[in-house]
Image (cartoon, rainbow, N blue to C red; front, top):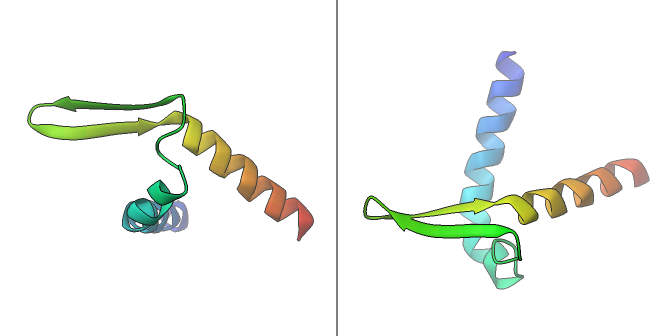
Length: 64
């Protein structure tokens, strides 16, 4: 379980660090990605981007 927690934490850190680069390619701004401002912060819920990246990762894993 500790390994999964470490992998998820590293993936979140990597994804948040690459978010400015990914936004240039449209990830995070797809239809189905929600962005709103609450409590003085900008919040985003990238549902469509998550599905797209999951499908891409599954395709790459299947090809390898």
